[in-house]
Image (cartoon, rainbow, N blue to C red; front, side, top):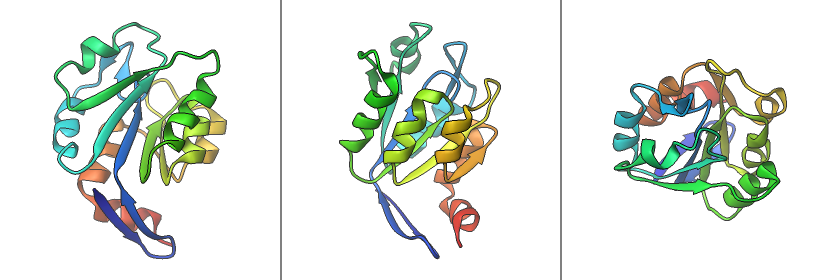
Length: 154
């Protein structure tokens, strides 16, 4: 569990990290360099889920051997499906960039929008608590939570 006490926002006991795949931890269906190592480290503190429509059909291969659960979206409404997935968890931080991440951001305790090379859907960005350019910087915030606290305190 990752515990954060953010002045002006309260105590967060985070048990789950939900990561979008394409555009967030992967580009063109391939994991972004540095993500694998950070996931290995974070998995010691928090349960990690990768949720995706799997546009490139590569998520299972790319996440093989990583300490994550992979959730491939099955419905026709990926936005609602992602929101329902997060709603079923307790103590969640999400990272994503796509329009279909909006509902999971709304359901999470903390949401970090990743701009990255694919950009970020405006509706999702507006539901986020924080925006960052690079996924590795976002994961580093969780590995060094005082940085996250400093940014989000009120």
